Length: 104
Image (cartoon, rainbow, N blue to C red):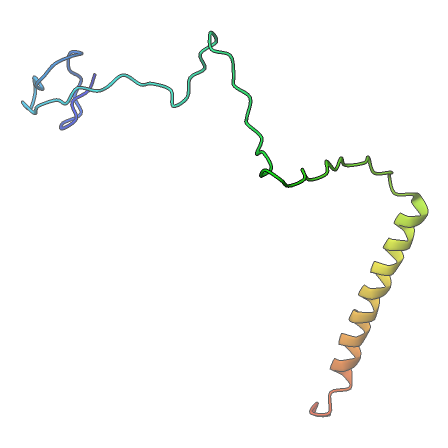
């Protein structure tokens, strides 16, 4: 154990530091923030019940998605490349055709 005032090592459980005489506060034992008690079974989470006189909402299950085909991936890639080429060409032509540009 170390003194909280001077930092020198003191005997565990000391109320006062042997070196500087500062009073030592007892340190509580460390307890993990969450503990699991294996003898208590986990409780299921209660699902909300519909109000009396109303119909329960339909259960929707997510259907598995099919992987994208190579042709679809190629088409998306071409569209992205064409859009990038268009915007780059537009930026270059706008810069080159600037009416305020001074020719030396």
